[in-house]
Length: 148
Image 1 (cartoon, rainbow, N blue to C red):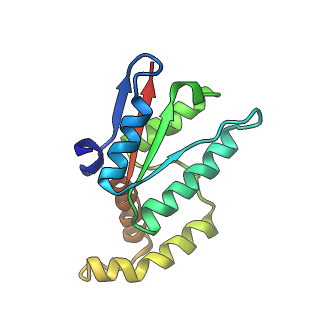
Image 2: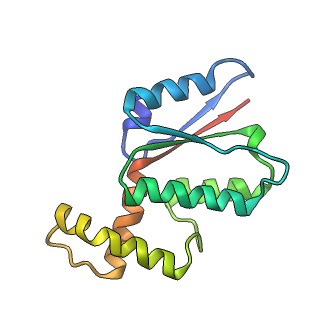
Image 3: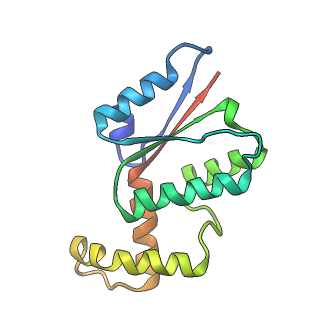
């Protein structure tokens, strides 16, 4: 739970199937007081579904400011681009074109009072709000990759 509780903390768990990677992740998230999210694979699950799930995670972590653990297993990789999105989140916190312009404007407008409360000296320009949003996502969204 120390890794997950740390700022921008993510983990890679490697072990044979049935070694408890999911259980350890759920226990660590519970100890840290975070929600656990895992995609629900279906035959029709594709990149669009992953992006919708990521939008929800970004809203929880960035807008609501709640800690959330995104548990992602190797058997959930249905498309190579899934890993590109995970890599972008881990490296910069941003997924390009994740939100439409009107969605991001709505999120940033909702963040104005929160940013003013936490950092009153920072002017609430769109650039500052977006940077603040991504920083909150990076602090609150923790990715745990469970691979064998």
